[in-house]
Image (tube, rainbow, N blue to C red; front, side, top):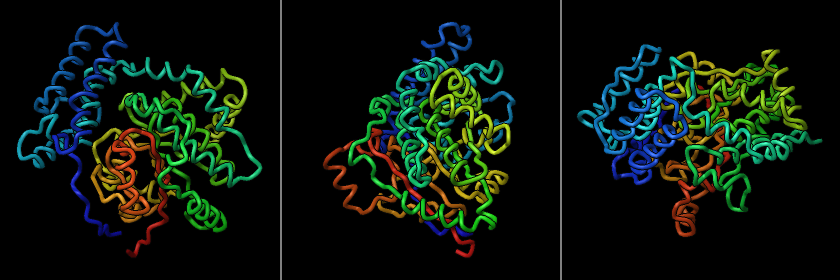
Length: 407
């Protein structure tokens, strides 16, 4: 189809966006400092490489066209770097580049410095383990995974828990500290009625191609959010679809983003627990053994490319899905081009390049937002909470139906 939407330019890391600029000057260097502290047994070359990267990002040094080890993604990153050079009119630096590129590339450089491709050692594992063994996560599973008499009610609840699980983000303390207790005005957009109507209609037409197609979930964080995504997947398998595909990061990134190793670590810990967690793990393992549930990594999800720039094989799979569920703030930024839109721009207009029905579940931890009920909604939020776009308090459940090929 033809995408007729004129997109605003992506956010830059210069002072034109305070949150992006602060991320590169303060938050990311602090994350690297913490990574060094949590891995005291790293050899000197790794620790030194991480410190150099930290200082370069904090000072706004030039972003070199880094000589990445030949692991399969180096050509893609070199191409992305050259694109940034054209955008900024010279060699980009950490404080003057497109934010989505700078942030994703910083994590790729971190992984390079930590030599993850050689060791397989997740530099963020200590933080992930701390959450995995926290009482809050297992209490959340007990609350969330409760099969109900009504399939519709069960799906609606699973979707909401999958949304608020996104608050638990190990790279962003402001959001994580809010937990999963929800205020009356925290949900800014709730398209579950439209979603459920679509699911009922597509279930009735299950002989059609899309009715038989899998649901795809683009995962975000490990830990609590991943547990909620797994509970949602099992609920969908019982009530909505015969197969679910969960897309994962090809390597650790954004501190807590989920990889296949995180899925299997979660399932192993669920197996050791009693009650609903163990029951959920058993059903998930059975679905995986029957190939009704797939855990698929892809380097695209670690890249700086926006969603309309999917590689052809991924494009074919996602556009043929019964439903694509896009999780989390970074994936939302990827979906809307990491740009500042008028906040009441219709969600469906912004995502009109995607043919498949799409559901975004995201708590707000950055400035991009679309699909609010009106311009007045944003104005009221600014008056009551000036940091509403970035503090992780509020969430969105946004749905768009199938896009007509003729548009």
